[in-house]
Length: 138
Image (cartoon, rainbow, N blue to C red; front, side):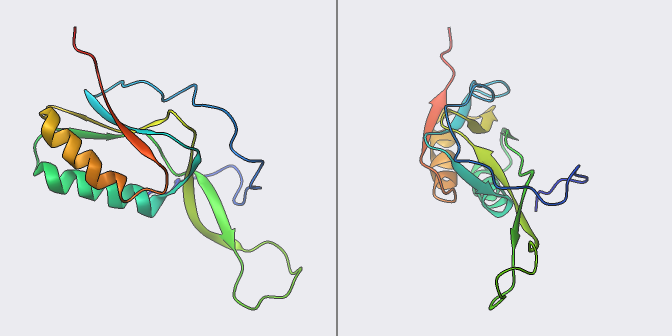
């Protein structure tokens, strides 16, 4: 699973709701086709890996896949039947914070039909609504 090698703080506060649209990671940079988030949410490291496997499995080693998001936010959980108090729980997993408009995956060196189907398979593994996008070739 994806996880940071080193973090400044082991446990984070969750923060407020995710507000606004993506102002970075919102254009295709490396590939010709992409999967764009249409709503805000947390994407877990497991979801990213599952979507990546779906894309690579369908492409059958043709073309390149770029993952544009990285799960760097730690999520903590406390044990079952734990009383109130007793401190914050241990880090359980990591998530990537995604805003509407964020390009999450990109592909190049594949035809549009293959890219569209691969992204369709990946979309079902993610917890946010997504849209297939492509570069306008001039």
